[in-house]
Image 1: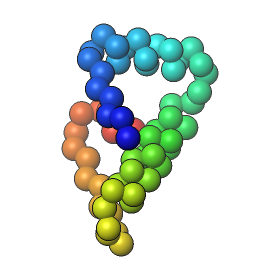
Image 2: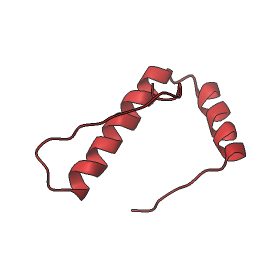
Image 3: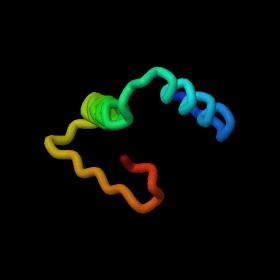
Length: 60
């Protein structure tokens, strides 16, 4: 799997492109959560996963 890192400028450009696509933000968050779950499930041998998120207004 290829890891991707985005700087502030490229993140803003990506966000603008996503806004123009018309995809609802809730769907984007669901996709992100599901794909993170799939990655963790594939990478670790655990029966249960707990996700903890802090403040920051970026957790969906």
